[in-house]
Image 1: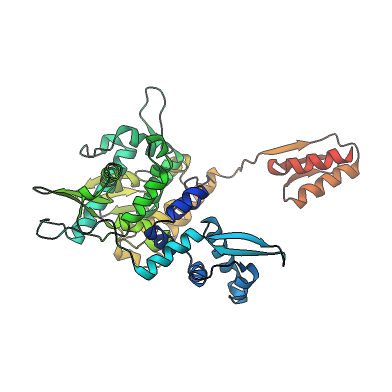
Image 2: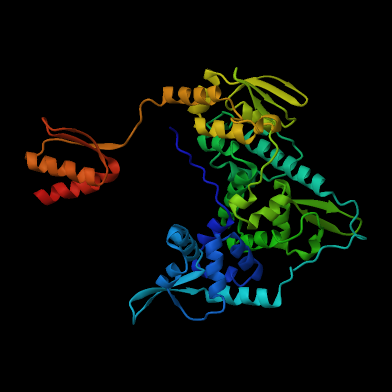
Length: 452
């Protein structure tokens, strides 16, 4: 089965991968400290708040005593996350020879100041007598989704995209790097990762694009730490409120234009002033992936005869359905298609898995069928998986082949070594032939060398 190669990471995964010096610089900002606190698992939040006013180090075993035995797995996840983000600094108590944890002093100082004295954003929303005709929250959400869909269409299929989107070609190439491939004199085609990207939900796609945007910031002469800091700060603004663009630095003005193209903010121009309005996509940046994944209204109805009805006006939805079904005709608000063996084989060849297709159909099920169990007929999901198994009957595994063993004892010892590392694929005891997984080859090789 094809391997899923795109992993949607959230902001905190990117923060955790930063060097220690840049992390400490980020922790000087109180809003970043609050954003990171909000993203932590519940138990990790508890540990941070308990150590907030403790200056010394605390023994690691004491933390384990704060939870019940059935919570030890959550305790380990919390500690690992805190260490990854350098919120906890590990040390060794020389007297007791035990591991200790201490709250990062920069983070501790910034969070203390924020909780005790409060904090204010660098900019305040503009008064209503200056801004006129601000969009409603419903209009703003519609704008954000339309802008995001327009961006995705330009990303995967420039010929179908709205030409009003003005994302620079150099920036678009950054986003397309892993999603499209192009040969000489041929139109760009979606890669395996590109097909998988399209089947993600909106929040997962957003995390991926933002991660690529930040990861390649150095190539554009932008400091990744400053970029993360501004985006996390932006997530604390109020949805639907207008903020003066003149309060932004030159660096932030360039960033805000890119974010407007992605639908994270909406730009408006008045008679004298211009302003930006954050959308829900922007405020989701500082919360965890699971918290931001809200249930959206579906549009797909799948029947037992494999016909698909999509009640949608979106060009993007039509392009996604073409990935694994045959679109027969399209009305102004209805797309009609069929799932066939040929269309699914084509999808599997492009790296899409049966589970991804079934998951997409279930997550986007129309409200009329979403309440049914199952939302997608069992015969359809079973057949999709059966057709996938037809082309995945042979599994390729990199391996090493051994023969000409000097003795049976050495052969049996090599087999035992491969079994210990769970890497034995095949053995012929009569002819003393052996096949092992490539990842355990070094262990078997070292064993054979020791026998000499």
